[in-house]
Length: 174
Ligand code: RBF
Image (tube, rainbow, N blue to C red; front, side, top):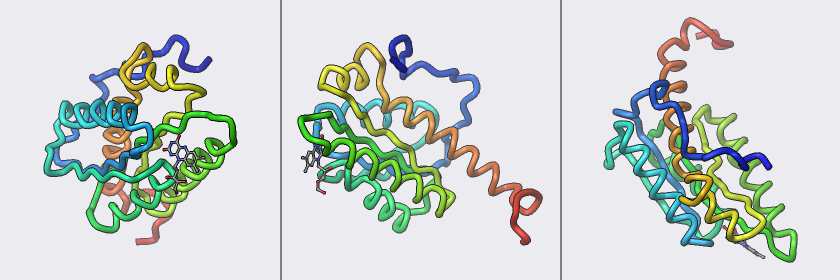
């Protein structure tokens, strides 16, 4: 199993850019709220720990994970953001709802990122059962919300770095 030996909250802090001055969006799905709220706490605390300020973190809640991409797009339409983190949890059940929702979120966030150039972070747990979800929301595999925040800071840093040198590299004629 991919995460059998991996604590999702472990990362090399020495290689992290500072999040000071960065602006983030967070979208949190309300389905399985006991899981997604734990992801949110880990995510928010990690952004603050690396220098982000509360006033620059815009959080919205949505009913379910399927709504994550739409709300993420609404957030970047409203605010100028360095990255948007989407947090949800779709637990496998007797039907295939999880496959449809998970694929829709993955495709939706991928498309948003490619089209906009803004990092949209996939913080969606896709567990087979509740125990696996709890293991990844502050349990024995750490907190996937922390990992999502770390990715957002790294990608936000990359975005800032690239926008500073965009006249020198890339495909742009300008
Ligand atoms: N949303 C989640 O975030 N997690 C779930 O586990 C979840 N399970 C669902 C199961 C079914 C059968 C349906 C119809 C929806 C489920 N949703 C879940 C809600 C979904 O993401 C979305 O909010 C609704 O389908 C409305 O667009």
